[in-house]
Length: 94
Image (cartoon, rainbow, N blue to C red; front, side, top):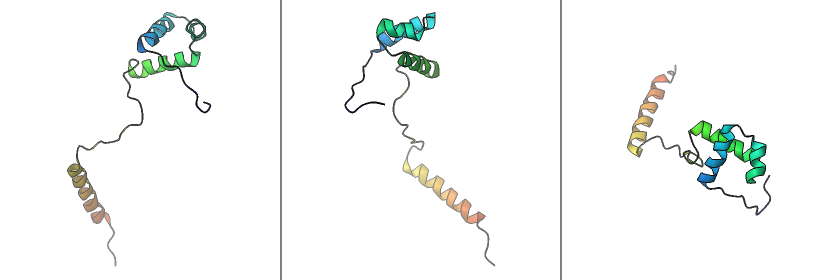
């Protein structure tokens, strides 16, 4: 867990790609960790990101926005249709 005020090291993209190139050649993360002074877990994380997204720097960071609708009019029409559907599904009172 990070301590208060802890600063993390930042690595440029060219350096990450160089380390990952050697990792893919067959060198272990522990060896590269001592050679480049990078934690072995960080190297493995870079590799997983590359595998998942096709490369470093491609994946968007942060929480997804979730804006799937273009504008409020489209959302309004969808909600109207849903409301009408619910009214039709409501059981009739005796």
